[in-house]
Image 1 (tube, rainbow, N blue to C red):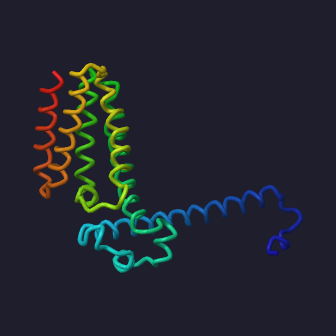
Image 2 (cartoon, rainbow, N blue to C red):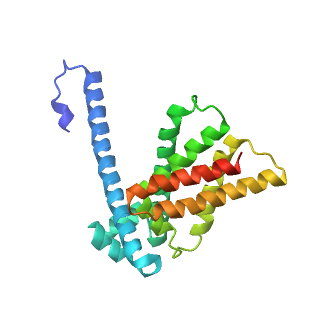
Image 3 (tube, one colour):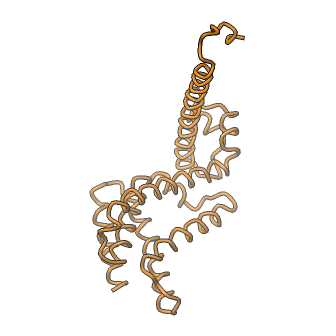
Length: 217
């Protein structure tokens, strides 16, 4: 073994620590490489699904576009449906992080519950535009079996957290208000992700927030 050559006067604890740090650094590089591979595969899958649709696309198409091996794709994700779900999870996580980063510095300064909700809406729509290519793929209607159920569950949870800022009750009026807000956000999302010109996005977001202000007055 290579450690047999370590002189006896060297502190064994230091040698052990050095080995541990080296192993940790190697593991970090391995995970970084693995993460880069996964991102490359997901970017390629997004491109393939956008071009061909979920049904017509094949794993071979993703292999060709990504340059990754078929074994690597199955190792990281599994089959085609799992790849599609991973695109959604990546989008959802990215949007959630963007919202948190945008909202956190202003939470204490927000004067009332409506200000907090406005911050969420603006950050959400801006993040959806930044991730518009993936969002378009996920809203095209050509979806794997069971995907829509998964998406609705996560979206419902996130929207409930947002609406909690408005402290809506359980009266018919407030329940209806919540549903109208959800529908408004859904339509605004389609409009924002459909924009190719970045100059169009602020107008859509401002119009959405202005409409929401009228609803929740």
